[in-house]
Length: 209
Image (cartoon, rainbow, N blue to C red; front, side, top):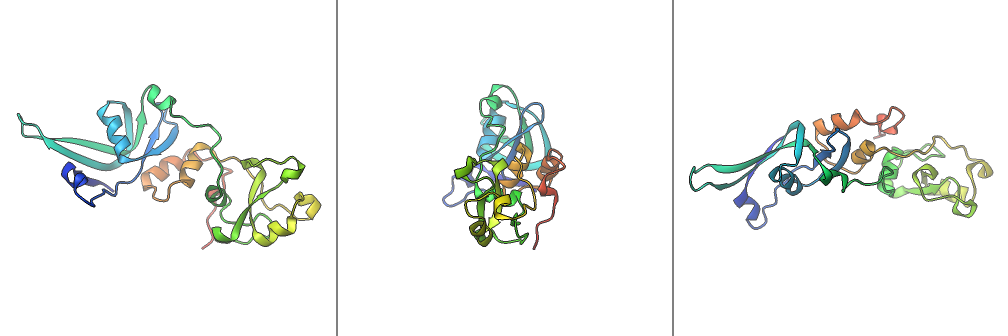
């Protein structure tokens, strides 16, 4: 997938280029975050792209040089490694932020107690060890649960509620989190990120249709 857009098209009313998000890495090739095409252009213009991988994602064609008549051009790859401190200062915690969308995706929309696959609107965030018993709102203490199971479990541990936990919670690594947070991942980006997802990740399991 490659998109070519000229600078005058960007400034035209109502014309917003439908560029895919660009996957950034640190200089060692560790996945970092998703950025917009504007951010990618900034890194290219500042010569902060250490190396690139993947396929060509977009070409941005600018104005013409008065002397040569040639138009400026930025050709960006779908995966770019950023050099120097620019990447380090923007690094987020090794533990990704927790929210329901990524939680349900991590657990493949499977209720941890009854084993039913359900849409996100019918799932809840269950705290395996309840707050009242010292539990925390953290990846290692939460699972997806349907509303009936969550209500049945109530303010108890699975053992006290006599409810078997079908799978164990875990903390997604950075690559897995990046997969969870982007709905429009390009094929080469997915292939790259999948190599960094641990073998025990539930992303290796199919989602029920």
